[in-house]
Amino acid sequence: MIIAIDGPAASGKGTLARRLARRYGLIYLDTGALYRAVATLLLNDGADLSDAEAAVAATARITPAFLEDSSLRTAEAGRAASVVAAMPPVRTALFDYQRSVATTPPGAVLDGRDIGTVICPDAEVKLFVTADLTTRAERRYHELMANGMDTSRDIVLKDLAERDQRDAQRAEAPLVAAEDAYLLDTSNLDIEAAFQAACAHVDAATGIN
Ligand code: CDP
Image 1 (cartoon, rainbow, N blue to C red):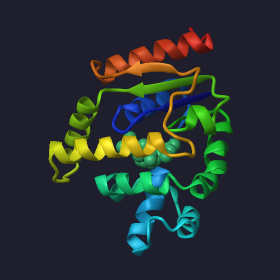
Image 2 (cartoon, protein in one colour):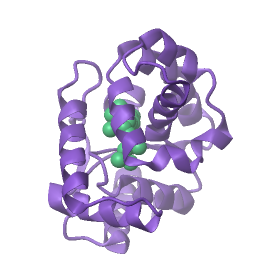
Image 3 (cartoon, rainbow, N blue to C red):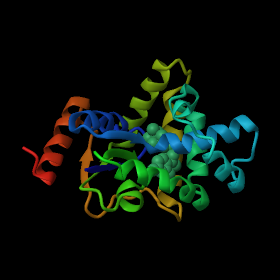
């Protein structure tokens, strides 16, 4: 089974995806980490973020351990990720890996921006997770502060708004809900309530239970 989860930054899709993977016995793949990894490698090399050739070469240097590296979680890495993610050759270079994770039994939960539309249009379940911008900014602000990164609510909000716009307006694989995605607005839902709503949808869509 493949569960595709898309949505804007800090909508709560990562937490939800991780919990759904555990609940249904599936592998979890945070596809945003792939773009964050490419961007971070370029930043570390002092390379130009618009250098598509260097970015494609960087995709071959991603290791499972690096995907867990805390340096990928900074606001700067998120911003840079959305720049490299707009380059079609980078998306192409990361396609096969994402497909292979998704299609290896028992299946996977993938979260990102183009999972239901481009990577796994064949997913049994598609969720599009959103929340209003202020709610998302508040969540990301607390997340960054909890991880020891000093920032302000205003900076985080501006950053997310810019990233949303770049992700939604790019020509290749823009952030958009698949036509058959189930819309889950988590603005007024805590993690548990969002998880319960998602499970109810997965169960109904797949005939489990
Ligand atoms: O965690 P957060 O929602 O802030 O972002 P992320 O999922 O880690 O993704 C970082 C950036 O990577 C996004 O702003 C997108 O530009 C890009 N991305 C993408 O283009 N396609 C994906 N499937 C996942 C992420």
